[in-house]
Every structure is written in C-alpha cells, then in structure tokens.
Amino acid sequence: MITKTLTVGDVARLANVTIRTLHHYDEIGLVVPERSDSGYRIYGVPQIDRLQEVLFFRELGFSLKDITSIVGEPTYARESALIRQRKLLEAKTERLMAMLDAIDRAIETDTTGEIMNYEEKLEVFGDFDPAEYEDEAKERWGDSDAYKQSVKRTSQYTKDDWLRNKAEVSEIYAAFMNLMRAGIPPASDQAAEVVERHRAHISHWYYDCSKEIHAGLGQMYVADPRFTKNIDKHGEGLAAYMSDAIAAASS
Amino acid sequence: MITKTLTVGDVARLANVTIRTLHHYDEIGLVVPERSDSGYRIYGVPQIDRLQEVLFFRELGFSLKDITSIVGEPTYARESALIRQRKLLEAKTERLMAMLDAIDRAIETDTTGEIMNYEEKLEVFGDFDPAEYEDEAKERWGDSDAYKQSVKRTSQYTKDDWLRNKAEVSEIYAAFMNLMRAGIPPASDQAAEVVERHRAHISHWYYDCSKEIHAGLGQMYVADPRFTKNIDKHGEGLAAYMSDAIAAASS
DNA sequence: GCTACACCCTCACGTTACGTGAGCGTCAAG
DNA sequence: CTTGACGCTCACGTAACGTGAGGGTGTAGC
Image (cartoon, rainbow over all chains, first blue to last red; front, top):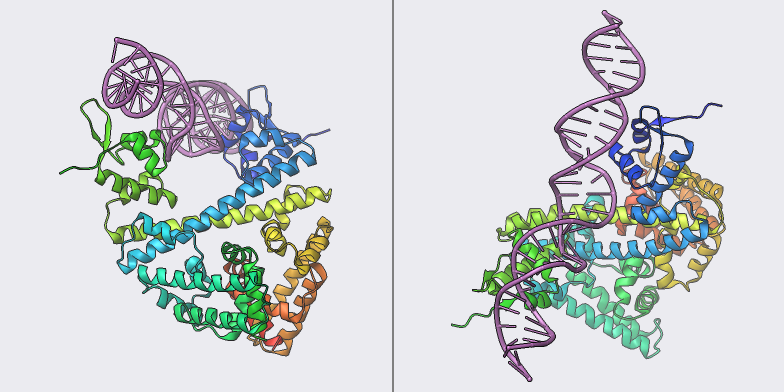
C-alpha cells in the first residue's frame, strides 16, 4: 500500500499558504506532520485533511487557539462555535460599515472645505444616509442619472445642510412612528401625506424621486437588512410600516 | 492666564482610553505631553486637540504609523489617505460578508447533517444566494411569509440540491448574458422568456415569487451594490440588463 | 564522484497596539 | 506622619506569522 506523502513545499503550494505557516502550525501542535529520517516534515492524508479543516475555520475568522479546540470535535459542538462566530462577524461588519460612513463624511467635509470637529462628527455619525455606499456604487452604476444627480448635489452640502437634512428625516420618521403607534393603517390618507413628504425630501436632497422609484425604495426597506436596520433604529417596525405605506400610496 | 492642564488619568477618562494607551502615544511621539517637575505627564489644550484627531483616525481604522504622518497635515493630503482607507475598508467589509455567507452554509450543512468537504464548500462558495442574510433577516422580518417559506425550504436542501440550484442559476445568467451580448434589448420577447424562467427558479427554490415581488427584486439588482456586485461577477452589466428585462416584463 | 541548485531544517528576532504586572516615587487628606 | 490614590519607568506577553541567518539534504547532470 502506497500512501501519498507530501513535503512542506508541496503542501504549501496545494493549500496556498506559506511554509512558515505550516511550521507555525507544527510548532503549536495544530497540524503535526510525520518526519523523515533526515528530519524533513512529511504530510500524509490525515494531516492534509486536518489542515484543510483548520484552513476552513481560519477562513471564517476563528483564532488558531479556538480552532485547536474545534477541529475534530463533533458537529453539535462546532455549530455553537459557528453561531457565536457569526455574531462576532456581524458586529465587525457593522462596525466597518459605520467606519465607511464616517469616512465618507470626513471626505465630504474635507472637499467642501468645512471642518467638523470631533463632536460634530459624532453628531452626524451613526445615522443612515444614502451617501453611505457612494464609492461602491460609483463603480457599479456610476453612469446612472439618478446617481450622478445625487453625487452632484450631495457634494455641495455643508455641515449645516447635512444637519438640516438629518432633522428633516428625523421629523418624517417621527411622523410615521406617530401614525403607527396610533394604530392608523399604512393605507390611509394620513400615511399617504407623510409618504409624499418623504418622497419630496429625497427629491430635494438627493435626486428626482418618481413614484415608481419611491415604490422600489419602499420594497428595499424590508428586503435589504441594511435599510431595515437603519430605519428601525428610529423605532421597531418602522421600516415595515413605511414600506407598506409607500406601497399603498403608489398603487 | 490660566491654562487648563490635565493629568493622564483625567485625559484617559475624558477620551475613554487607557493610561497605557496615552503612555504608548507618548513613547512613539504621537501625542507628547508636557511634564511637571516631578515627571508627571501634563496635557494642555493643544495635546488634547491632537489626541482627539488621533483617536478620530484610529476610529477609522488607520494604523498609528499612518496617523503619525496624517495628523497636522493639510486637507488635501488627508483626503487621499481617507480615500485609500475607504477602499481598504470596503475590501474588508466584503471579506466579512463572504465569511458570513460561508458560515451560514457551514451552519446549514451541520444542522442538516450533511458534510461538505473543503472542495465542496469552495464549490458553492462565492456564489450569490438569498440565504446569505438569513440570520440578519430573521431578527428583522422573521415573521414575513415569504421569508418563513424560504427558510423552511432551504433548510431541507442537500448539497446536491444546492449544486443543482447553482447550476440552474448559472444557466439563467448565461442566457441573459447571451441575449445581452447579441444586442437583444431587455424589452424583448426573448428576454421576457428568461425573466420568466428566473421568476420560476426563485419560486421553486425559495418562495412564491409574484410578478410584483420580482419587479422589486429587479430594482434591487441595480440599487443595492451587494446584489449588483454578485450578479455582475457573472458578466459586466448583467445586473443592469436583468433589472431592465424584469422591469420591461412586468409592465 | 562531484558540483550545482533547489529545498529542507532550526533558531530567533521583528511586527501592532497596547495589556499587565513589578517595583517604586508623589500628592493631598486626615 | 501615615494612608490611599495616583503617577512613573522598565519590561515581558499577545497573534500569527515574516524574515533572515547559518547550515544540512537530495538529486540531476557532468
């Protein structure tokens, strides 16, 4: 019986890691290969399997220490680890998005020559804004008219503008919340009025928002967790209520 | 003239950092305070200002080394740094999202008792799938019917199912690409036929997808960069074409 | 058999942004 | 003058390797 044996270099190329990494995993006992007479590391099938599992969990962001206690464990133990890790990653993602948001604002103020101080930055920080994904969007649909318009307008706003903008949004959200708490259905005249204010707001600050585009936005409010989350910060269920109201108003 | 002077502890509490952090910034010359006769660190207004700026950039994920060369620089130099940093963060965010995706799959296979090996995981990995944001979505709109349906169905799929699913999607995307490359307009009968196949696919694998819901999805394909990106992986401009085709078919 | 040359080995220090004591001085209150 | 809170300076530890230094091993070609 011939067993496939590989040397460090082979494994490194196969698994797309450096030799040092394999040395390290050997050192900490994570993936310990056999040795040849001359002391060369020899990787057999079991070691390769183990390495692949290790790399899989590493890819998911687990620490090597955690991986040590995970690999070889039964399914149920791994599952809870996965779930914990997911929460962690979710938090990281959110943090990164907030950072992106903050950077956009910083860039914006730099270009408009305004200077926000630390508190002013915090003031606007953490709030939702379509400008959040500007650069990302620019690469993908940078030639859409609505998008161009939005960039052109937003690029000229001063800090005061943004604060006014924010105040307006807060007011609209508050209006929706009031209706919702009062038990007034989304498909009512009162809701329709706020819907219209919302659409006007977008048209004023970002781009011409037709009823059709508005309807599309409304769908995204519940379909895209990013939107849902940001809106629901202002009140539980707000995104769903707004979505319904916008849908009702446009039909 | 009385100048406000603060000691390390004061500053640490104010800025919400540890004393060690301030020591460190002093050591590397990032924020160097004055000293009292007895050697105590004394922070004046200029140092506090500088510290705030440092912390701001730290919040944005810059390394201390980079911050060293950024603080105190004129606006234009900072802007390019901000833009570079933004790209970096964007990449990180994408990576995290891919990790979330992979974790979801791993959890899924663990719970359904299937075991995917490394290659099988990679095989499905990196492809777009509505299940991507399941947990996230669960918290937000876990009681939507379409969502419940989707979870119920997807939770029972085996690895083979996912691969078939993936093959089907690839085929549909390829069909759209062919039409697009052939210069056939999105608002044509041929495109409409593929649109219908797409809708049927979603209805079959995830949830009952009405024409209305499908129209909403189509809008998201260009409105949400995450969707756009994932779809455009299969071909530049595919998302936009699909979006147009779906819009044309539903009007 | 000898020489390249590619490949392997083991130290062991460097990296980032601090955390965490150890051992010891300083200051204001009682 | 003690006491406790606070400050100081080393200096090693952390995570996951990167990066040489200095020195064996294996084999292909002459």
